Image (cartoon, rainbow, N blue to C red; front, side, top):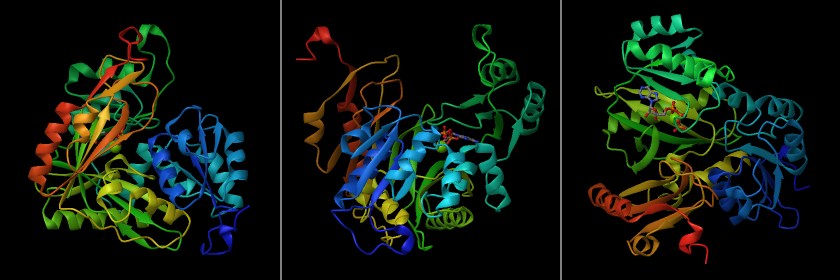
Length: 415
Ligand code: ATP
Ligand code: MG
């Protein structure tokens, strides 16, 4: 085993006995954590249900198991000096059990994960800590949903409390007529008379926001807190498509957002990086949409555009190393998600690469997912710019060039 992290701050890194980081989840976030960890010759062990997950290409060991598999999580613990997670589906109860025996082992704290996993618990926690969130209520029946829609006024955002991401567990109810259909489909028992597993639901008042913004904030185990610049997020079809930094908000909004993000972090236990998603209303008020206790899609720009990336900051935080004060290295940056096309599931090709890479100051990330699915995040592009105006015009150019298309064996794509 490597130097015990319980004995105090980490001051020596050994190549012979490297510090070992266990990551639950081997998607693109796990891969990018591993890539930064590898720069410091740390050892990476990934737990993921898929043996060919994106992080498998850059990890030392892989445990193939479900994120919730208690035995596999215990096995990961025997191989790790510190365990972290890149996905909220990790088994928080098993992690709480492990942390009760070794306080520093799991970061961010599994108690924080437990709160965040349930959108209702999370919002209640934020509200209790005097952080502004959209009005919300739990929904147990169709009748309750009718009443709440009346109270909130249409449209209303219905959300699955757990196991949802990339907007897949959200449904916008636009009118009274939709309530019954949506409720039965969402709560289970909908399709073909088959009883699906019941889902716990909540509703939120629809926020007619002017902008969506986010801030990555990190805290190390010693309590040092640092935040990244404010990012502005543009969604399409409930999924993040574009992040631009700096966000086009006033200095006061940026200050309020940063204050709110740091206050949220102070309320939550544990070390690591957190993504704080926020809405900015038309009268310049800031409220929290939700918190991710992990690196976040809207923080990818930091790899090329900041003095420290969100991934390195996360590693520093969980190993209790000093955090670096993140600084933007260029006047503007854009991050474009490369998403799987609609109506296609299967192997794919990303085309337009030569033309794309001939654009200045552009970096292409391809995660290595074998299969494309509608709106699946397959990679991203980062564009560094001289001004936001110039960067956004290059975003348009890049979007026109890059295409994800089906890989068809009979077209000779496999040769
Ligand atoms: P992600 O994984 O992208 O964070 P998610 O499944 O966790 O998504 P949310 O963050 O709750 O879902 O919502 C996804 C998007 O839906 C938000 O970024 C926002 O655009 C929109 N949205 C969510 N809640 C509201 C709301 N109360 N009012 C208006 N829009 C909302
Ligand atoms: Mg979200």
